Image 1 (cartoon, rainbow, N blue to C red):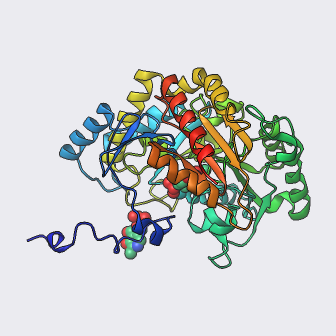
Image 2 (cartoon, rainbow, N blue to C red):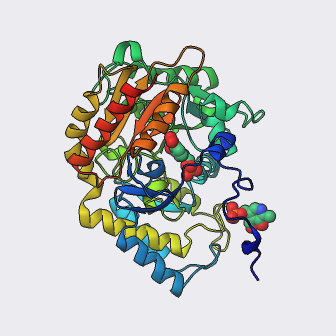
Length: 442
Ligand code: PXG
Ligand code: PLP
């Protein structure tokens, strides 16, 4: 008999929850038991509007038929095939489909299972690329303050969120950071990309002078920083970073784990900003969050640099047991079909002005000190309660959940990023609910 039956079904103690206040959660659990399109259903039978696409990943909405069916039929046909030295057809099909929608020149895809793994993959690729090109001294990595690049050692090393770093020792050596671009004193309540701060990209020149270009492998940034509370690139900033990287032979990595797959109203942030990186990390929206998957897009020159040496030799000593897992690939193909059928990779462009107006209508509500938006992303920054940072936003999160909407908070910032299928009526509903919540909290 299954051991499972001996477990008390509602004993919450065994599961150590990720990025969660475990003790608090377990005293008053918030549980979802099902989901459809724009809504979750809670364990007490309430409908909750998904204002965050899960964790920025369910871009096509929940339990979409093409995705569900693709997974079901793939599971019954080929459940797993070894990822190393063996293949299966749909992983190749998926790679081609992804390259078709990728920014021009990003012709190759390496599969992972998460954003964190995509980041590790990209960083290793960058260092190895310079080595295969005969520039083995280029090992230094440059991230940015307040950057989030997942939770593995490479990612937290280039990342810039202190709580994610300070507990974990010395991290990777040879890492430096650009300053973040959050300038509330100049840019508060900007609509879309802010005017001020492009010159912060010149800090890269300072780091090049400090370390010498010959030691620097790559710069990694989120085109729009998500996890840290939605920080936008000032007008012209990403273009400048691109120019400086190109000038010094430094690879530019865009971490598009959140911005990829339609979040800004274009397929990728690279398209939105007209700036093409050398490597682009993705996850989340690639499979609608339904089955774990990540994809690292790479320029042809980088891929081709590895394709030398004896043909029987492995070119890149890196990969995961589940790289290109067949069921994850099926989920991703079902996702791409859904995006295509419904125009979701560009739907955000039409909705963005409506979203922007709705969001900025919260200016003047209690506690609001800044509002930021781009594509279908929004952030409402609240003044912290003196001496208790994060408490105000967290009570907004709990209140919103009780009233029927899922929002996300980080620090004292409310972040919103609904599925790309949201209607105008649901945008109003979400924003009105947030308004009521702001009026109801201390
Ligand atoms: N890079 C970026 C830019 C991300 O946003 C990761 C890497 C890591 O992905 P994985 O799949 O390993 O989690 C992310 C993930 C939030 C939130 O609420 C953001 C993320 C994950 C969970 C919550 O802001 N970003
Ligand atoms: N740890 C052990 C003992 C393993 O055998 C493997 C893979 O074979 C891994 C970790 C890595 O696992 P994955 O490929 O799922 O990342």
